[in-house]
Length: 187
Image 1 (cartoon, rainbow, N blue to C red):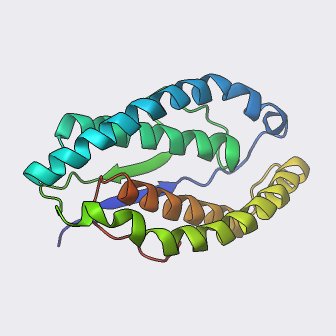
Image 2: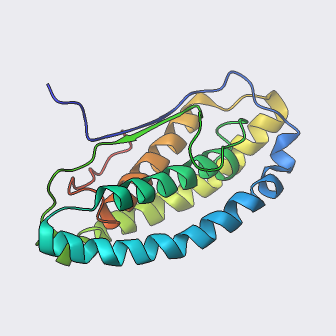
């Protein structure tokens, strides 16, 4: 049996710091600055990769690895500072972190799908907009729960990991990194 092409999970923390809740947004500013700059590089690489896929049916491995690494880094920062799922400070780039994020390199990509992937993700974007609004409210609820108890409510933790997983799958698909159409699922 072949392993799934994408794996994403976050380890549930037994305790979270009540004080870090107030400063995580400040601590990630260096990450956000570097990721903002890398966003321009990723955009340029995606354009080059689009032509490479059109001509060869392959995403150049070095560029693919770089873009996946940036998306993984961005996801770790979201785990830390947007969703408050972990207190471990995310590494700059590669490094150990309690998030399992793996994507299998596709040997071949469809030359035709590159023309319509943007269109195919529209239903996902609509659903994710609604889930994002719900997540925004429930993140506030989680923040208050962490402040009071020092623990992340497990149901909300799994919901937030699911929203982040879904969002990441759509990002990977829209970035031409995979031809696996994202399921409409938090799992």
